[in-house]
Amino acid sequence: FADIESSDGQEAAIVDTLRDDDALSLSVVAVEGVETLGHVAVSPVRIDDGTGGWFGIGPVTVAPHRQSGGVGRALLERTIEMLAEGGAGGVVVFGEPDFYARFGFEHVPGLDYPGAPEGHFQALRITDSQFPSGVVHYHPAFG
Image (cartoon, rainbow, N blue to C red):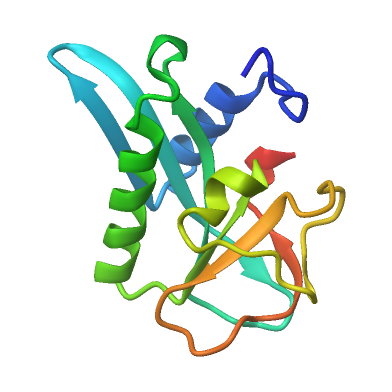
């Protein structure tokens, strides 16, 4: 995350806090042999309109020497698949719009994460027939 403008360097601490608070709903890890290549954390989010069953993806990490090699894509595909298997209503993400759009994420007017740069907060419906609306609240570990 050192070269990512929106990073504050706290990604590992976020995952540790989610784990310590038993708020890590899903942890998807890519490994090759004994090397960890990447990780996706998933935790529940609260939405002002009361919609339940929604989750936030993040942090998403891929080892620098394996970026742009399909690891992130594979992790996200498996994460979405596992959320669908679990009956999640949907999922939100704060990150690079072009990357997440490949998986069906889209900017949703009326669904807001304060402080997110234009287009960098996106959502994906999984089992819900419509998008929720309101401010999305992540676990306090996200600051």
